[in-house]
Figure 1 (cartoon, one colour):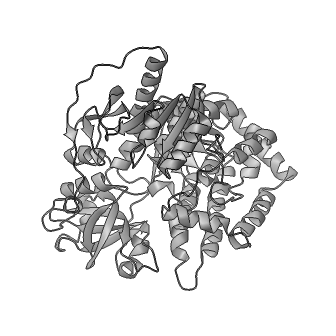
Figure 2 (tube, helix red, strand yellow):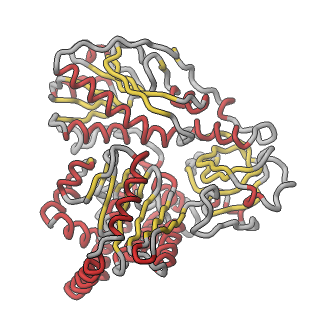
Figure 3 (cartoon, one colour):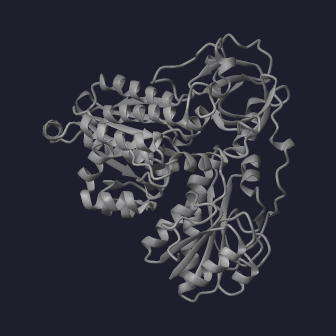
Length: 572
């Protein structure tokens, strides 16, 4: 079929459906919901069999849904409507939830139900649930609806329940440190993450809170007498805040800024830097206990002859600024000293990595003595340092285990390992051009052609489209698909790593790897690849063309699109 994806933004759900529908053989074009007249023109130009709306904030115009079938993908089980349906589900800690595909009929979330899929809820932020369970259920429901429609079968009879969910109020997102327990604070935070954030007073200032985690008794030791709402310590990006019965780590905040300096979501220790100078740093080791929150964590298991290392780095939104890059670089140097046969880089639960930290770069643009160009330059150098550590780990097999999506430099960090594994729900964006025509670095001119060949490498980076795991496997971007979803992926990847570490021919494989790396270095040193890439990046950051800086600013501040990018809108 010819399908038009109509969406407010080309978000994670839209990208996943884009890859799944193309894999199924459909022709898919995208139109961003900019104005009714633009949507009407897109329908005339593309003449779709179906308009699919996975992420909208406005009604589809009647002039469209009356002339072509229009389906709405609504996060929520049948009958559970409203703009904050998922927020309510997290807030209420419901045990099961779902996604519904509806026929558009002019009312919000009220048309005939065409398909629905359910899933078990877990204790997680609404953003994490959306990226995994909601998207998985949406794909299942859309596929079912399409298959039923193509077969001429009627829509299922369903029982609607729940009713229209009224929008959340500001009071419901408000944290009261003196009245709310740690569990209350975490529940409010999870229902508000990643937007608009929980609201609270910290350091006598009202701000938005994100990325909240429970604090252990060990982390709170010595701070038991502090008043609720007190900021008592820091760890990585987070500050430790006392609650009435314990404490929580707050990983990121959005402060109220002046009109000249727009508000940014930043690491709490960066946004509140002037208040963190005298705070104690409470940082456990890489192999801290599982209940002790930290961004980086290392595990190791197996017999001496077949030992496996597992390094996770769970950075908020997959963004890697200077601090994250240096921490990961140092962690890689530390685990290099460990006697393992296989090292798995597991990234984060929601994202493997998305490359340089655009929010922190935007923040630098407003700091005295700093600039976005300088911050970008330092950040890409730090990303290259991390990638170099991975590329030169030649005494063990390295694996990137993608539990979540990867984009831009994060994709090419993954490709620096010997093997790349992912589950079926992962989407890759192995290109930089969508961010103001960036050239890119992270040694991609070495790792990508090495994997897929020069011709495919050019097509991938110029294509600018999201790539699902089926296509990535065919192209050679990944080596294995393990399981259908993130929930099963960890155990499958761990078992596969154990099997690999115990293979009798692994020593010969490692010897071949070392010989290949030595030969490649003689042919063309890694330093040369880096220098050539960075010469192009220097033009992007410091040259006359401001495209990167404009694109970054629009991305960070979520500026609405004025038009749909041509690589998405095939009808244009």
